[in-house]
Amino acid sequence: IGGLWLAACLAKFDIRTLVLEQHYIAGGLQHTFQRNNYEFVPGLHYIANLPLCQPLYEMVADPNKKIEYNQAGNSVPADEGQKSSHDLRIGNLPLMHVREGIDNVRDELTRHFPEEKEAIDQFLAIMEKAKWQAGQFATFRIFPRWLQFIMSQLLCSTYIKYASMTTEEALGSLTKDGRLKTVLSAFGGDLGESISEGSFAMQAAVLGHVIEGCYYPEGGPIEFVRGLIPTIRSIGGDVLVKARVDQILIEGGHATGVRLANGDEIRSKMGVVSDAGMGSTLFKLLPQNVVDEYLSDLREHVVKSSGGISHTFTFVGLNGTCDELGLRSSSYYYIPCNASRDMDASAIQDFYRDTLLDPGVMDVSAGIVFASAKDPKYSSITMPGKSTAIIFSEAKDEDFLNLLDDEDKASTFARGIYEGHHKHNAKYDEAKALVKKKMMRSLILNFPHLEPYIECVEVGTPLTMADYTMRTATLGLRHTPQRMTDMELRPDCKIPGLYFTGQDVAFAGWAGAMTGAMVTAQRLLGYTLLDFMQERTLMRDLGAGHVEDMIQDRVKAGTAATPLEVLVEIVENAARHLRKSIGQ
Image 1: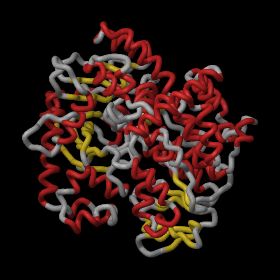
Image 2: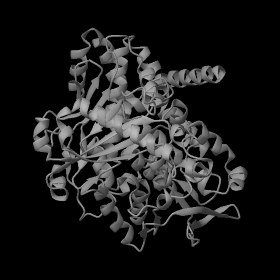
Image 3: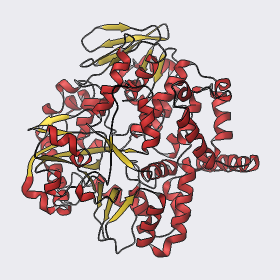
Image 4: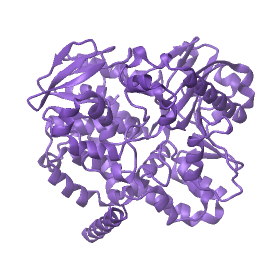
């Protein structure tokens, strides 16, 4: 979706683009697929903070393609209007809810952990400070490196402070209660990192924006695609599907076009933008001699942040409407454990990831989403009398890759969706069957009344992800302190005409992909520091100045207020970086 947004944005400035999508549907993970009269949505589960995110789409989309949104926790009768975006079941602890509004979250946490009220208050205060500056830090990547460094140090010192901490370090300074740490890490469970390795700034951003409210587009995320493509085509650009890129062409040290899998070559005057992810671009789309000559430094940085979390997805078709089955539109997170003992959130997370393919451990930590309850009107039209569930769990991609023979493993990332996972071997099929059994067990344990209504089950693994995206990491590069403070993961590189966009330029998720696209757009359009000083920004040029003002107000509220505070944070950040460097 980041590539489509970027193309639509450039069209607003009369720049024609050609978007190439290897799938038979444009939009990446915004697509849907059908099985046995059921329609499933594998990617988007919610959009947090609609007042911020909705204008990002609307300022470049076809104005005739307005999208309405349903609020999670307020879409179907079973929600009871509670506006709970996430429900959390950890072991034998009472069911917990993430409701819209910071006071509701504070009350819910304090209700379960009354003795930790001070720690909860401190956590929420830090969360508000840490969650708003990630976009600004990413935006400074459009400047020359020397200016990027200065701007980041002076205006993002608070972000760097919290981004360079792990969640474990941040929470460890607030509480010793392992149960509370587990709950707080699970409340932001869409990050894909354990609390011992994930950047606290991103943990804060996930939860901080979730409590602003979560929403789902009516008609599903494919509606974003339908709204962006007309803008791209309005000035003569286009979007092609079934157009898998085999290689980015580098001639005379410049990116000049691409070669498709069918052998066709397409040339471009302005260059090539890759939304395939930095890792896939460096290791699969560029000749390695080119990477060795021009991008060896960038490769080192990408490798340091590679190995992002993978997932398995189980898609379930249910014979019955949301009302009949009592389905809720909130996301449900299930972490089986003995909550009466001291808990280590990272150890729990690692255990279930490590034992996913172990038939001796049938428990699994899983997220359960009833997508049809998030969009009941559309579902009633496309699947009358039916409902869907998606169950996902963290996985280790190497566990699935090791099931393949050498030839199959070597070609997994190369052959694309037309020669994909359906050709894997019996061991892989057995692993999928075990995943199916575990996922269905978690569904029935938490929603036993649904068992008689199950009609259709489809399993996707990290290798399925590779078939469609050339990577196994669901969220792209990792969200560690290393990655979230790395100033080399920029939209440009040392090869003129080659650019990156999407999640890896910013951070994970729908909003991250949009932010990455905005950063790349500003780099391509040549915005400078003088433009920013004169308040000429991309958002203002696209007519969304009110959003820019809102973001800046929230950023300032969480930033060190005086030059002395900034200086102290810069010194502390430098000292922390030095200690970690010595420790390594």
